[in-house]
Image (cartoon, rainbow over all chains, first blue to last red):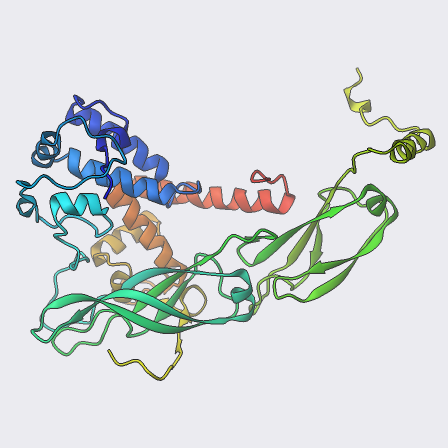
Length: 311
Length: 109
């Protein structure tokens, strides 16, 4: 297990006051909050910052953490000192997202609890949320996936425990990134005869090197040579399902002038569109013949691309 | 755990097909009902129906409620703060979409 320098995570000195720690946390939490930031890795950073703050905002935990000394560096191999009394910290205010490092120091207190409501005598089981990442083609065609989830369940003694569970889920065609799939009765067991809770799977679409996805619309960059753009041509465009569409590029196509293939986006009652966005790629003139070709081009045109820069 | 034969579980896409009562939304978003009422009065959520018993929330309310709950918890925003943040996030989303469509793409590699 690696040591974590919580002061470094928050970017504060070891001598920072509680106010300074709180300010630093607030600033970073706003910056990296996964609902706010679209930066890659923001969610990870947000969790790290939250964990650091959970320790440093609490005078007892901070004192205990400080007692390990200041010689530790982030990423160093670490085991808790033999006289460490981690059992003292089981107040259970944590989300279950902590690092191993955190758990070895402060216990896994609330791991199996989760949820903020107290349960009445007979109640529906708790709803659960999880994320699932699918490929773009799965959104086009639907898919079947077996997923592993840590789910609450009652053991033989009636204790609520977490258990690994496999679910075979049918992903419907037409689902989009950010949407939720509700699996009725597949979450926490009911209490006192109540029905089981529902499982919500939030859909993420794995980034694709060829296509960009925006809601139900899909974008594809299409590089063209200058002569293809100028003279027009016909190109084969792959769709996310593997089908190939023949697309006519009209003469005089400008870079960035997108072409819409209606209804070829993510399918649904009102299907999305597939946008083909042409770009123009200039070949390098390397051989003498190639240079000559460019010179011929130059001679054939009276072309001034910078008229708008002239006063 | 018995799991030998495979029955594929069919789900429903919440955003397209589901309408929720306040109780259902509160459960699904793990949020107290009075907080949902507060969000409605602040304009964060806009259910159909006249009174809380008749309220029907569209499927995308779930995502919105979850976001609102996270923002309140994690950043300690108050009600007007959450309403403003969600409004700005909506605008940001729209602008990002427009950027995609007009292809002044900012994430060009």
